[in-house]
Image (cartoon, rainbow, N blue to C red; front, side, top):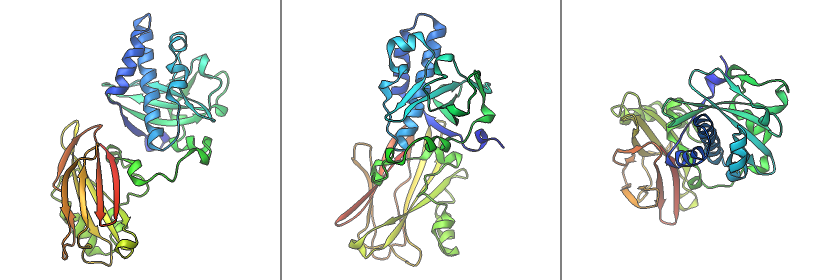
Length: 319
């Protein structure tokens, strides 16, 4: 099985990406050049969005693809990684089996990412990565089957460039990727979190009527010294509701070895701007609490806040 079958990451393209692509495309002198520019711009924006999610610094507006004259003269889709180099983001249209490399992108690149579009151009898949040093100077096409998994890109990025000290509230959990079995490291399968059979079965039973296509993951949250170093489990289950809409269920459970949640523990659903949409609190004998099921559109974000007195923990999600 090739890497393109095992590690494809989906990125949703919103209105901002398309607005920029349209602006760049209408500047071109022919429809063919306009289409090329449109796809190149979306490809760069998709990789920029992914690296932003992964906390990697980029300089979106410093590349040739963002320069009016250079994008008019050349077929470029470069994204600048400060102090590292340029990453070329090559678009792949439906049915294509290789990425095309024009002469102007054969030099001064740290590597190439293949960005495959769907028919509606509202979502792309990052198919994989290949380093420049592995490409012959005579090569003009790279078969998709020869790409490496996307995580090979991080071998080209020094550790100092990443920002591991970001708080949980600054890191967005991409729920849409959960449908493709792509999960952030801290979000685990229920059987990894709930040690006893009874606990796992209880958690599964509480979401079993949600939807047959649901995906559920859990994360252990340390409440700190204020609550006696206790931990709780934040459980999030998602299910497709319509083509562009997702239904979401959020619960808070005690950690294995505890029967009840700490009293006065509160869980809030916050809008992207921080407005409280829902709130639920734990009483002295609650073995779990949950928010009312809610729905959101692709591209929307929200926050789950867990608090008790002196501490507050937030998790940010994007649909």
